[in-house]
Image 1 (tube, rainbow, N blue to C red):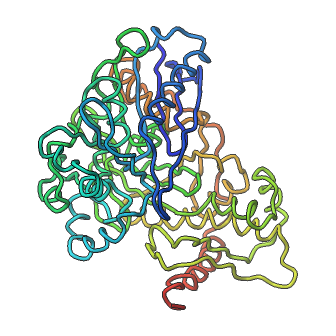
Image 2 (cartoon, rainbow, N blue to C red; image 1 turned 135 degrees about the vertical axis):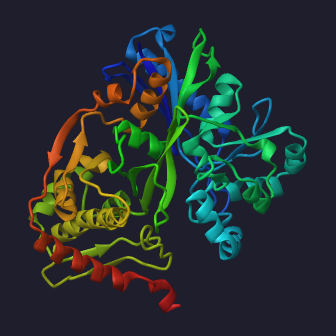
Image 3 (tube, rainbow, N blue to C red; image 1 turned 180 degrees about the horizontal axis):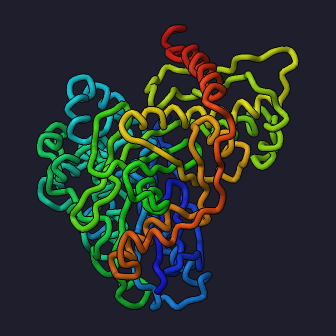
Length: 485
């Protein structure tokens, strides 16, 4: 009973076929273009996303060496917050405005000053141009006839999952996890919020119906027979589900260009400096999560390679770091600092350098910075919920030095899972659960397999000494750009 997972990312459209074990039977990925009309603006062409995704799913099935008719369900996971408005014939009225796009920053600054607290209380989010609501407003305000079409009920909004489901099935739906990233969804009531819609001047009729993350939304015949589209979750929530973090206190870290940390909080949705988001909705029950984002982690290694030229590839950094000496701190605040500092004026800093500092020392400091930045968010999470271990995924997790340092500085085990495609398997689990491939959460839990476990090797005194040095370094980086201006 194979399940097809559509994993639609920011730069490529991926598809993965899993069996019930679960094992990867076939995987394929196709890139699509990025568009930058102005500085700070980022767009995608939805038609190019659609075509790339269709190519990926057909190629993944071919690589799995199965017939398309053998697929029992399709699950979708997606880049979150990216905003598309389209007519009922499926044709977009404008390019997708990507989550990275900052064109609405000034609009949100004005809204935040008066309504920031209200938005945080209702949505769990910090008012930011990152989320969908201001992107929707921009399209309605700037695309000819867009508002007119919206008020006449001829325009539809969705994040990328919703757009793909519509193209596959004709149904205009999304799930709780994606809805919670729009800055229009009241996570306390589990519904679209009229007050926020009025604040952004967005007609409610354009919004998709919000459904569970695991249920049959509709059927597609794109593979030659009717197949249920039955799972949907934003990429980070899908990774949390794919890591089988199904109980409160279970947490995952995805290491990429930046780091995304999510912790399952069950029914709790406490206000913190972090984001409160919906993890998933299953059988009418919502599970919440705390989320913290670190802006620059893997990107700091890319800087070492591409800008400084002190490494040739990422694979060599572990051995280099082992040869480096301790005592240098690198704060990679290239574009400010995210959670829990939220300081857009912070700037990069390296301190502790002496005449005999070598490139190995800088590499070590960079890997340690990734661990420290992750600890900053975990410590904030620990104010709300107990966390006993961290499950990890993403490219940097192959670095044993980093994983061991992460365990040392957190003081809890860091666990690397056997399945690397954690985001895709999360979507597959949700779809398979809806059609009975997996019976329940316990059945899903049996599929998670540990590959490596890194236990802390230093004592609490040493841990605190190291972390104290990190906090001193951060204090010198904070507010730097504002002070020098």
